[in-house]
Image 1 (cartoon, rainbow, N blue to C red):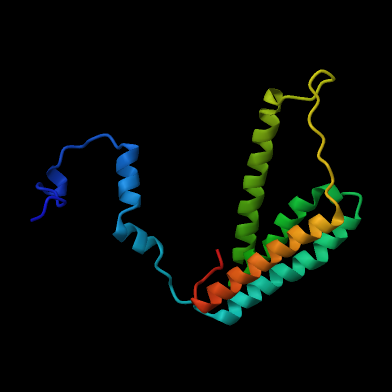
Image 2: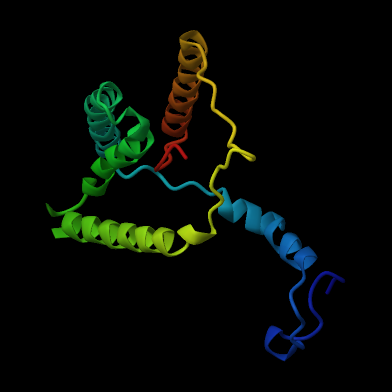
Length: 168
């Protein structure tokens, strides 16, 4: 027996309060790291590509329309809505309803929490105005979008090369 193994069985060891150092030691243990990096094979590449294609088509139709609408300032929320296409992935039309209902319920809860806590929000005053966001030139925005697109493409190709379930 070496000095890293416990001298008592786990069920007889005294219970000590957890420390950050102990948690870090546990999370950084080689077996834990290997287990968290283990990859499972992709069950069906065609279905995974189809799910991404569905979300991409939804985004390509909805986001330009939102950008050109009077509500272009809500485009970030519209992009989250485009991810709903992933709800239908590998699902039966009742599972989609369940997932949609769960999303609606949590959205209503989030709205209620925001309304209830609005009184604690700081509002701009003439003495303390909020900073104004500056609009970046189109070239800078296109450059940032191109970098994000390239990074997403690299993630997709790497995930395919390693046969993982999801690019994340």
